[in-house]
Image (cartoon, rainbow, N blue to C red; front, side, top):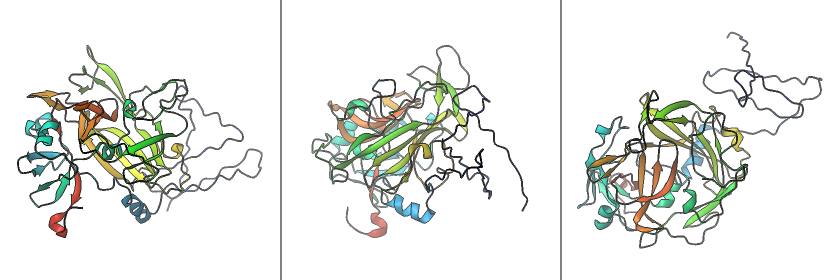
Length: 398
């Protein structure tokens, strides 16, 4: 019950450290107080000429927790994926023998037996549209499609059938999260206005992506407006050459600088899948050189007036009420050799546009992530989609 006064100095993030923010007339400034301290507070803004203050439209950024949860449950991505990848698989009997139960913290915790070829899964009948596998409790799962992975991460630009948006500098770039840009990067990587994003949810019988006609909400997929923004740089690490992809604390010969910043998005506006996204490379158990990707998703009301600026680096908005999917870095295998241990993968059942030599998957590097078309010659970890808790409900496959 004490009254305290705390002065916040408004500085310009785009200028030299400590430069005061040049507050201008007739500009709206939004000050966001995070939930970190859980304090009650009042803010008073007085006009320097004592005129009536400008009143902004009321923007309710955070919903009631129960309301947010109900909204999240309506998303296709809600509780769609297993929490962790498969640790041991009995392919012959289409049985998951065990899942990982925590986030692995070292390469040694990823046995080579938990990596599989796309062709192995196909030959065992695990990739067809009606295929499913079970675990020891008869819970039922299947492989995700490319479109379901896209619910987590945007598709790499060369795989889309949309006209790529133009950046402020006139170039046409990727539309997926890339955080490796320095603090003083002189223009934003992403378009200043929303661009269309298509999601095709199903496969053809030959495992190619079913690109049927879609609208804002249809059985085979949907199309909505998306906009991305970079957050501020939070960490700077160094990485060894690409074939190792390891973060290290200090620079040495052949290491390169890697900037770590969160990336934010409002995706699928105009559809029932309208959501706010935050992608962030985070240290595993406090180890800055062992990373994982955190994907946080919050459903938005279809008529929400939230803007991308409202969610960027807004700790209050991202404090709770989100769905989180974690993708660890586990590498892949070429025969018996570990490949790129600092990268992460999430395999789909869908072939790439090049045919059976490539498969769509979430491709997580030390500097970006996207749904890409990657060679099927490598063995990848398996993450499954939940179909039915058969043991609990005793019903057939949905």
